[in-house]
Length: 163
Image (cartoon, rainbow, N blue to C red):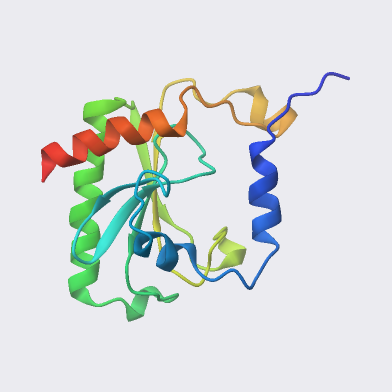
């Protein structure tokens, strides 16, 4: 049997089993180390960060600064700002990595797929024709064509242009 290694996944597996680590969506923006924390854009009420364990290159998360698990408890002001930042994110992605399509979604609760279920966040996943292949099905491995740091550099520059 041949093996395909994706050692970076182990960090995710180990971290997802710990419950006392706090909230990365609260902690990371406070560190003011956006490159290390993959934060590509900050607005007054929310921020955009690359998913460290992406489904595809350019997989973004839009996160309000307020720690809330229920969508109905997010203020209208925050909800509107999130929508504005989603639109800005779409423009940044289209101008840099040029996806053929984009999925936008939110997973409410662990059963719905939320890896972090106590802090609401939206996912933006760029898609390309033919980006789905046998690897995730057969090997449970996703092949990404660009390093996170390189994608962070491209998107950070583009978001600065869009301010």
